[in-house]
Amino acid sequence: MVEQEFRSDKSGYMLMNKPGYPRVSSWPNLVWVIFLMMLFITILLWGVSFLAYAPLEEMAEWAKTPNPAKAPWYFIGLQELLVYFDPWIAGVMLPQQILIGLILIPYVDITPTEQGHYRWSQRRFAVAYFTFGIVFWATLIFVGQLLRGPSWEVYWPIIDYDLTGHGWTREGVALKQGGAKLGSLSTGTGLALLIGFFSIGMVLPFLVTKLFPKSRPVQGLDKYLKELGYIKYFVVQSHVLMMIATVVKIVLRLSFNIKYIIETPWFKI
Amino acid sequence: MTEHQNQRKTPVQKTFELISALLTDNPIYKSIFRTGYPSTLLKRMAVMRSSFYMHIFPTKVGEHGLRLRYSWCMGGITFFLFLLLTLTGILLMFYYVPEEHRAFNDMKDLRFMVPFGVILRNMHRWAAHGMVLAVMLHMMRVFYTGSYKAPRQFNWVVGVLLLLFTLLLSFTGYLLPWDQLGFWAVTVGTNMASATPLMGYEGPFHELLGVQVDNDIRFAIIGGTRIGPNALVRAYVWHCVGIPLVATLLMIFHFWRIRKDGFSGPL
Ligand code: HEM
Image (cartoon, rainbow over all chains, first blue to last red; front, top):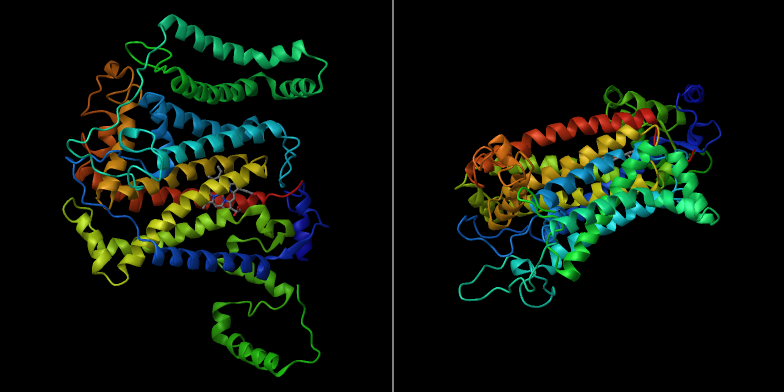
């Protein structure tokens, strides 16, 4: 009686909705899991709340700027990016692109059957790309939250100043200065570099499939590109390149002291 | 799962059955829980259907979906933390007034005067951090199991919006204690808005629209040229009314879709 109703379920194409698939009644199996989860979370939250106090510093005062002033941890990755980018990129364009990229994931995926398990052999690229993004994000948070001290200089977390990162600026105590002198590329070089990077990046995968048609991994790449089609490819690759470009810019800044790739009177990249 | 076994009952079992029969086999209990105690499979299906709260769950679930190593229960944890935050948040509202000269003192009162105020505030604070963490882990779980694929693409989109609103919820709450920590964190955060191209007074091409410090997007967000009493009230209203409303609507939609599309599983 009950079973019949499930068989006429429209979403019957999934294994778990097929008649033979092991299914159990939600009561008590699922209800039990949920109940234990609620109990566990409640106890955990109570425990933490008894042991650790929510931070409360001195009353807000406009005239007393703490050094450093840090964003909450989940946004500190963006603040960390301010070292390498102007705010309109670090605080606006990059977060916007992250959100758009996340939203587009389901619409550029071409392995619809690979779901419902942690097996990644058919979606290596997707998993690698997503994981890289997560690790990148986590690294930025780690550096920003724990390794940055006054004037956003790198501080070893156990020395120099207190870990909360909100020591006051003290008069007469010189803050560490921003070290080396930073330079920018000339507009021509920068423009060439940027356009070159994105155009080469766009055609590189196709070039590779033409140059090494024999190698097995490249054949896999070829198949992947064909299935993807040009529109999806463009969407995916432009986001991949943006992420790589972000990393490259960080490397350029750290190892060659390059502040801007492109400097115009209106905006700087 | 476990069917009734009528052989050899211990006295403890007999007592237990007597008590539960007394509790559940009476008109009052049945007026509340129509199906009676869900002891048989049929009643177990019925109880999920006839109860308003249980109806959010399906009557039967695939076995793999129950395994914690599949779902990590992270979506559920996120939602439960949201409920706890609503509860503690409402209680905090009794003691807190978003006014420049009062807000910080109300925090002190919660710490030293209000009975259980410390625990209340601590719970709200740590649950908020927990929810941000849980929602990120939930997103990772959904990605790594490929659960965003057809037919759940749009629910992933709704999820991304929920992620954004969770972050905003936490961020607006950060300012409310009106201490140096929140004040400057929110100053740093909202300053980024002034760099928005065209619409922020420090952003590229802002001159084209005649955008200045007192009419740009940051000014609209914080109601002034710097974080002040207006920003405090705005943060409060967004935090306690605006964003929770939107997030709740999105969650209703999120759960509805999970029920309609079914929980993900191997094809
Ligand atoms: C306030 C935030 C959120 C809440 C309360 C929430 C809640 C839930 C719950 C309770 C489930 C059931 C399965 C589970 O527990 O894992 C679920 C599934 C799902 N969530 Fe969320 N979620 C939130 C945010 C997100 C985000 C950020 C994403 C992705 C970007 C997302 C995408 C999905 C998808 C696609 C499913 C279906 C998964 C499946 O069938 O395996 N959700 N969500």
